[in-house]
Length: 251
Image (tube, rainbow, N blue to C red; front, side):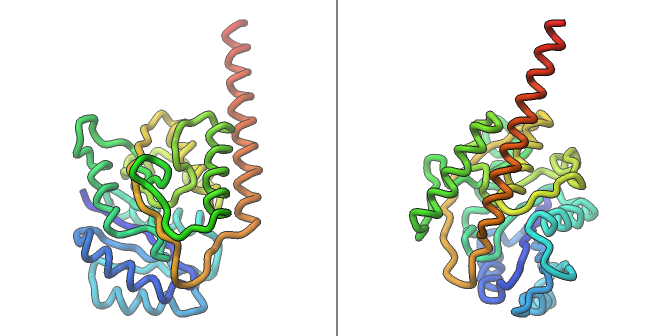
């Protein structure tokens, strides 16, 4: 299955070359699309240089920082226009290990008894998964955010906010991507809920998430607040829809 790994970047000059080197070792057959939002530190120029050396690396330059969700949507559109079978989300900062990618790809390809799911999540919170070098408050935010989203949306996915995941092409084609305006953690939750609402399947495989050692985290209070209010809104909308359905059946 032809695979494209979409890697959004903003000021990842130090970590991006290491990620690409790791992918060349652990997943040499995949192509990579670096989606750079005009990084002030020259990440885009570094990506161009690496692309000239390696035909599997491609670069999509964007005019400025517009957020994670917009970058991924642009990467998805690029992948769909070129007929890739599988599209992977992966961070550039080293937190997603290249050696875990083959596990996601094997699962989405259906190399096990029950066939391939529509979306495979690299999960920190299933048996065998975990995090390395995270302070307690990051664990609290991630676990607490996932717990709240699970309850609000009534889903049983263990790691809703993770950003290491593999989509089948057919999955992305069925999603209304132009309607997805969420960013950050919220973007990841949004895509999972849309996949489930469309009647498609989601599977999780364990990964080890490693806290970045270079650059700066993009986590901010605004990202957390957006996730909180949007997940709450989606939960209320879901409950209202169920209530209306129940009334219609009774009548």
